[in-house]
Amino acid sequence: MRDVANHSTIIFAIAMKTVTLIFAVLTAFGIANAQTCRVRGICYALDNSGSISAAEYEQIKNFTVTSSRNFAIPGVPTEYSAAWFNSGFGTIQAPTTDLEGDFVPTIQADTRRGGGTNIYRGLSACFDLLPSDGARVIIVITDGQGAFGVNPITQIRNDGIAVVSVGVGNGIDVAFLSSIATRPEFYVPATFDMLPSLATTVEEAACDAVAEIVTPEPTPPVIDDPTCRIRGICYALDNSGSILPSQYEQIKNFTVTSSRNFAVPGVTTEYSAAWFNSGFGTIQAPTTDLEGIFVPTIQADTLRSGGTNIYGGLSACFALLPSGGARAIVVVTDGQGASPPDPLPQIRAAGVAVVSVGVGSNIDETFLRSIATQPDFYIPATFDMLPALAARVEEAACDAIIESSQPPLPPSPPPVDDSCQAAFDACAFTFEGVTAVPTYIVSGQPDVPFTPRIIRKGGSPAVGVVNSQAGVFEPVFADTGTPISAEGNQNFTPTAFKTVVRNDTGSSIGHETFQGNQLIVADGRCVIVYFQSWQLLNATGGVVIGNINLAARDDSACVAFSTVA
Image 1 (spheres, helix red, strand yellow):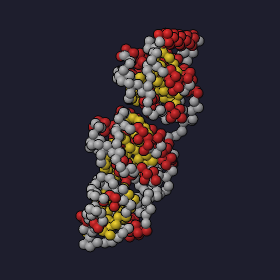
Image 2: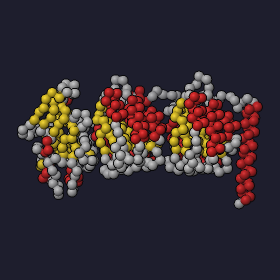
Image 3: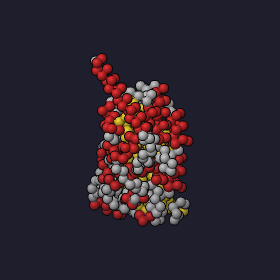
């Protein structure tokens, strides 16, 4: 074993001398100082594991500063960023074009963190910090080995990003570091005391790696593409107890920045948001007023705490989206947990795109990739990275919408029989954005809206709060023609399905807590809910100008819908 160790040491020493000789030759010919490439974005992934001492991390930081300065070309705006990784990951410096005023001081002030080593995390963090096109490179520096979880290399290469790997010391996995570089030649061995002097060698390797990649011409932001003119977008925001108030502020800031990215002049987009913990609910009902309603409502929202049920967030958002057109759900969570029923088959059948954002290291990455329209539309993040990821989330949402290939109007998941269509046609009321019999999930939380806002067919006259008045006019299962209280081994109450007041001066349909086999009985049914009173609003929909109260049931004063559990 001692002979093997000595042999490895000799090979490592020879490699070090070779690198030093190459650097000396390059310097002698004036090549080492040549600015060989114009890079749009560069990110440094810095190993922060426990095997690195504080003094060694200072050498890594000195290398990073020297190396970054080598990429500075007058008149060329380059975005500099840096991420740390151990068994987790995070942002040291978000993308900035201010090298000396912003990037360099931040790197110099950074401190080591300790922990294990997961190189994939460092690569993923840098991938999310780089611009979306142009010449881009990741430089990963590590003294160890270890990479587990999802391998981001394929996605990085498919996106035309160059990778240079720097292995420091003799505890690294040379074969692995050579494999993650754009080519094996773009792996650079080093020692800690050599690092600052290798900055030019690494720069040249980075420029050669960039030249190896055929970078497509930069394209205009995808938001200007007609395929990404979104009719409706909903944000499902984790409100569980593991999120601190300061972290929820970052989630809200991300939501505001991201929503503004979808604003296209002349395109009417409905913005909405839902919260979820072990339950779920509406933060903002669908609105086309981004700055006047949506943004202030998001900014004013407060954390609720509790468990985590991601399915609940997806269900809540699905109910808030319009019934056709390009639609997307962006779910943001720092945890894991999803209690049945699974709304994804219905969401996908309706052609709704899903982008999932996992924040921190406690998420279930496999699950979050599975709920996204495609695994590539899952985006890992840290709380401090979130606002900077808004543009990447926008691109993922637009790509996911294209992948979803949604029909103009989504099919209802269960077949709707003629009796339900007849009931829907007979009712003078419908739901916002709904022109045919809709289907809604009824297995969510009690006493919260599971439908869009109730409106008059044709939109006129405008109505505000609508009341079913404690089931005086009992709901009916249209498929059997029986009052709902006639069914179930523990009979439904007359208020099992009822109107629920929203936070936008309107009403939706909700349900009470189901008992016994009631949820099973309610699955795949057609429900008619009758109204006893409602508010009349003025033409702009903002002022109550009258009230309608019925003494007897009016068979047209109702809504009808199909259910799925």
